Length: 218
Image (tube, one colour):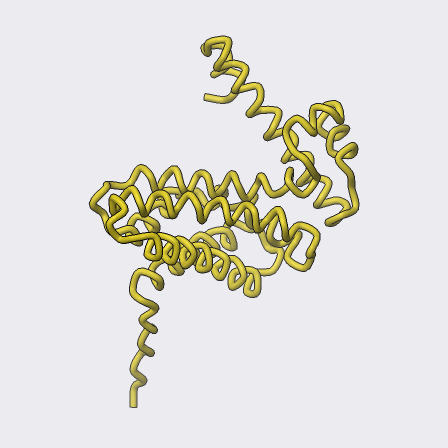
């Protein structure tokens, strides 16, 4: 069901939330479109507001900067992954849950906005603070999931170290993918990125056991 159809059936409060979500999405899509056209740092909040068909004031009701509007794309993907992680069985090993959460995002297009944002800003320091904030937010969420799964018995060091390792592996997967595929956002490339993310979690789950080379025939 799309946002318009859902709104027709929702309560007034729910409709307000749906309208807010639609406006937020509209702003991030406008920001991404300007990033494609102009490159990092070459457009303003006013430009985004105009492209989204809203006022400057409305823009700042949702985001405090152009970078924050773009970083919301990273937030969106990470929020979906965290939601899938929380749906996994409580007794399942956390790394198996992390792999399954990523596999649940079955459509390679689910990673497309994240991949495009990374490819368009990979050589720019302008978004570093907002991007770091998005990843730090995700790390905090994973730390919370680990604490819930272990009822705190594993301790803070375990929860923080594991969450930090998951984030580091996610970033490594993005960087490795970009070195191999560059700005290519074809279905094949996006499927490769999704595979890299899943494989990175598998490496972490195995304790980074190096794959053994295939034996050569004599």
